[in-house]
Length: 136
Image (cartoon, rainbow, N blue to C red; front, side):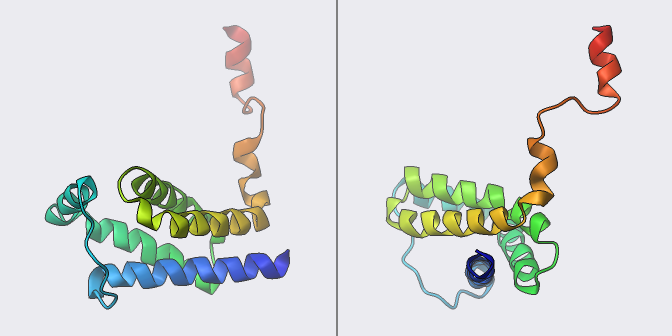
């Protein structure tokens, strides 16, 4: 499992580094989206919001490749991957297989650092909140 998560971490980092850099340098020539996806991406590019999106792909990718702050990188990439899956599920289904593959990679890496996320899955009352809960 350790080797699989390491490979998944490198693949996830490479995918987001290449696609994030492609957003700025446009070295991979991909056909433009059609239909409602074209309108959606048109709004992103006209508003220059793409700069934020691509930076939020490049920075965590570098963290994954350097094996530093992996839980932070996964936390940043989680919502981005969710949006990518939703975009491909609802607007541009041609890219859905790659989006699902990236999701599987994310889950493998997250599983390898699951102890970092244990606090958010704890079913209990936070210390200090106990007194407030009892007084209600």
